[in-house]
Image 1 (cartoon, one colour):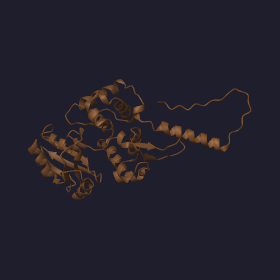
Image 2 (cartoon, helix red, strand yellow):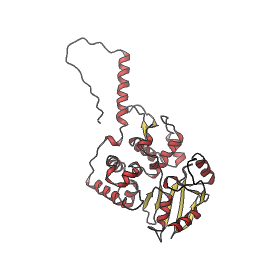
Image 3 (spheres, one colour):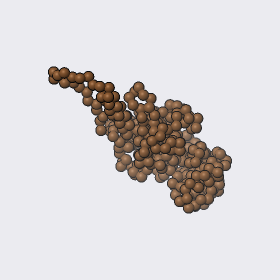
Image 4 (cartoon, one colour):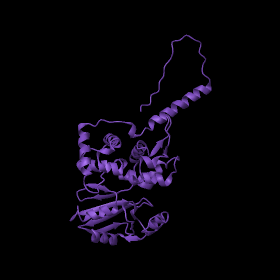
Amino acid sequence: MECIILTGNTNRRQKVRKPGTIFLVAGMVLLLVIHAACSNRVMRENSVQLSIQEKAFLDMMLEEWNHDFRLTTIRQIADNEGFEYDHDLRYRIATYLVNHESIHRQLQVWRSPLFILTNDEKVLANYILKNAAVGENIPAVEEMKKALSMDEESIEEALFILQKLGFLHHEKLLKIFPGEYTLNPEHEEMVPWWSLYFTEIEREDGRRFNFQCVLDAMKLIFEDFTGEKVKITTYCPDCLRSIQVETDNGEITDIKPRTSVALKGGSCPTTYIFVTSGHFKRWIDDRPEIVDRKPYNLINLFELIKEER
């Protein structure tokens, strides 16, 4: 849908009254509303024709997703394959994915935002959910910089892509008003909650892959990545702090922070790692529907997975 503002005049000879103040104000309000609607169009309302290079990149993504459990993002694939990653490449590929979710089973199951957003952007989106109600202004950029250790440019890019995905609404009216981002009432429909969680595996050569489930990532340590040094990175769903588990040839060599505990809830949506047992208790107390409420020591959980595989 194109947003078009029509202007014009008439050649009829007639005496025209100058509009009163109220009509001028009403006209300006209408223009502002139309501009706001245009600026908040989501990617689904756009179409894009990929270049030859972009099609080659898309083919690499589709091939990557054929690996069991891998939910590798646009950014990760660009870095893994040596593609120059920039705003235009990500936005064009993202727009194509949003409009063609039927091209791969992973897109059909998990939806495109999971592959479009970087891991830092997923944490930032969760920060917004924890600190802004629907319709409220989101936290200031300076506040997010301090809380998430992200630079201003990365935050602005994240806000832009979250707005284009329909997670945020931008109240900016014309270029003369700075405006604010607010949480879209339909954010859960536009960006499902599972799109904002990840477990990342980084191999010795620097190649990185996302998995939805901590258990999947740990299992693959003994299958796809045997004999390697591997780093698993995720985040605490309660406080959003980063958690890292380093392994060497199937054995845990380091955990940061050492106080981390896991919830093995029986399925991926209820399997998380927390930075402390206190964060675990606070998070799980708000979710009485979870049956297995036992915190696991990460080393013990790792050994349990090794025995179960």
